[in-house]
Image (cartoon, rainbow, N blue to C red):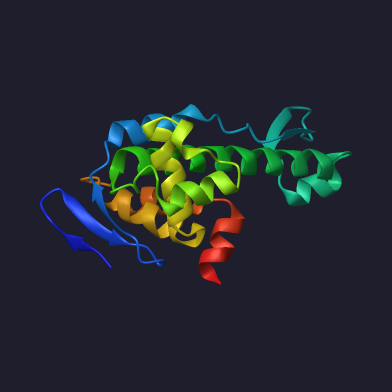
Length: 180
């Protein structure tokens, strides 16, 4: 559902909201991705027949054979998921704030009344927070991976594996909603 113009592209969400996508700044995207440190994988040490010690990254098989390995691996996997979620939220917020151009509802709109009814006072938030709040409410969560893929594809020279990797980093609940 994309229509290209000069350095901008129109995109329409599954809910019918049409927005204009500006080309993202590749350096800003890289900086945001680097803001969240991914946890180091757990390791284990083995001793070879010659007595030399070797360190290996723990996988599921090694976790089964290492005392406390299952718990260590589970904690690591949870930490990776938490870091990927944090990174995804930062990227989504960047896209909503810097890449998407959209006309926001007026301050006395039905949307503001709805937000106030659920405890989000949009009129007391900064214009940037209001825009992010609006887009989170207007774009269905299952559209986010496709939107992100579209935005990243606007970066000149973006590699397919980089785009796929960024989209694949979304938490499982986003992928399951978009696939289902």
